[in-house]
Length: 437
Ligand code: PA5
Image (cartoon, rainbow, N blue to C red; front, top):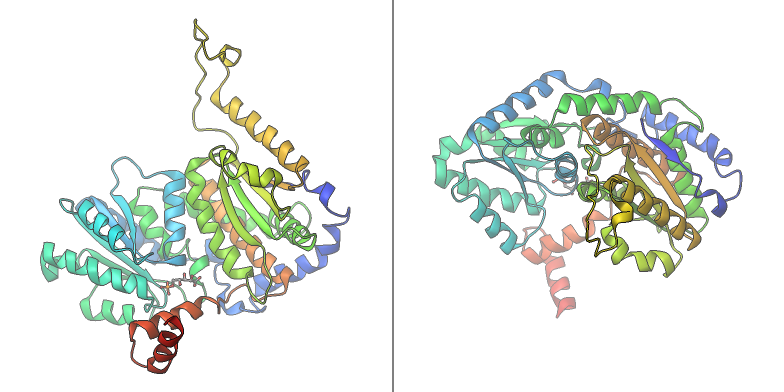
């Protein structure tokens, strides 16, 4: 399980930083468990690792097997919570060698990116998984039209139908209506789970399974974390993480940098930003979630972290052991002077980089939290996902906000609809055009 090492934040906080938050944590944990806090109608993810729909889970595995047999690529069309989790897990664990490539579309409005993806699909059999809880989000809706028509050109209307999988609300929304009319196989985003907490539903599981990743092991890892995080107290890693974040925020640290020494974890941090940014960033409050990949970013962002504005703390996620070993070779000429490392493992060098960076950053005024995870596999990915989700719920309640709404996301959508000329937005369009000149 995950261990949260708080040794390197202590010097920045009062001694009782955990104990003074214990009652609030107990209260927050109760709200999550019972689903009766602010936004409680969206806490279906809390018990999901134990309570998921087994029949749908089997259908996901069957659909993944079919896609693996008839496609060399899967295009996942979705944005925000409808794609970040799947991409994070696939990049963290890697697609299995014979599995289809998984591409992501509908998370931008870039003509160039869309054309490039279409070019990649030119001579490749592919399927599409369109994912939208609301079924009305513009970016994926537009991308789906484009990829649906590409499929229909290639396979005909009937053939395309057998290659389209829709993941959406059980009964409402434009995508559900379209899926019913066209007869696509559909999967459900449960009503009580918001987009950013949906990676362990069909939203994440179908693309992850298509990539050949073991979703049974992923869910088992999440269930293990769920059981562990129900135990109250200082040893509960989610309680520690949430309390530490809140204490550091109160002490003026407004930015959290999620750091990892694994390049494959880069997109995991992108996933992590969504629940934390959307759950906490409201009412003029919230920690700004940022991320770095070490050691690469020590040669760019490292300078700022060491000596820039003292705004941030770091949360370093590390996996217990690498999946193999790489001893550094002896070199008779030793022109690079590195023979002092000969015979040592690359992991030893990485460990010293981590230790040295930790001390340097703490000396520079940046508190460091360390999250120790098990080895990088399906089970530990499941544990990390559940851990971060649960700690996010606790953090939102500690901060005193509704962690499960996202009213701010609507502002740009309304402006975009007006500027695009969507019926019903005529008055706003005139006003916005006048302001833009
Ligand atoms: O957290 C959220 O709910 C949002 O960021 C959504 O994930 C995002 O807007 C996509 O929404 P939908 O799945 O309805 O297309």
